[in-house]
Image (tube, rainbow, N blue to C red):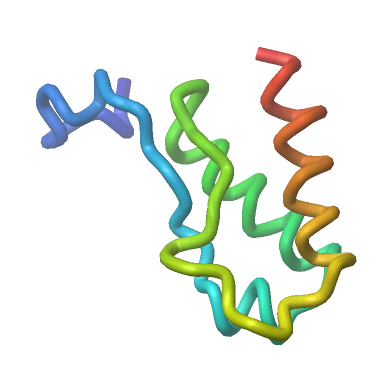
Length: 79
C-alpha cells in the first residue's frame, strides 16, 4: 500500500486528528470541515479517528462540531 511506505509499524496503529484547529474548525464552515475530514480519512484509511489536530478552540461553532460528529457517525461506520 503506497501510503504505508516508510511508516513501518506506525501504519498498524490508529491515526487521530490532523485538522487545523484554527483555520478549519474555528474559521472554516461545515463544508470545509467535512472536506478536510474526507482528505484525512482517504489518506489514513480505515484506522483514522476523527478529531482536531490539537485542542478545539474556544468559539468553534456548534455547526462545525456537528459536521465533525456527523462525519464520524456516517463515513466511519461505512467501513
